[in-house]
Image (cartoon, rainbow, N blue to C red):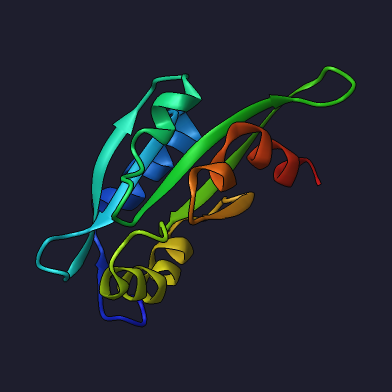
Length: 137
């Protein structure tokens, strides 16, 4: 359970394990349920297009996501890292931003195997090149 009292639904972890172990998903989108009691699975996708992934982040509401980020090393090797995204745009209302912030650790701790975490408040912070730069460090 998160500090906020919002519980992580079991489908959130199940989908993550499918992404991590079976590679059946490219990304997963999570949100807090309308009744503010549960973190729920919104969508899983096998779409490889990073721009389509970014379209899942609303301009005025918060979300979390997990993305199986594939990239090439400078020497040409293929790599993958599972990246956790915490999306909290500046245009979101204060109450949801606070609830998402206080609930994040509950979800994050349920997902074992995250290699990097990205905090996004605008689309530049979650752009492919920005994320690539952060995970290559």
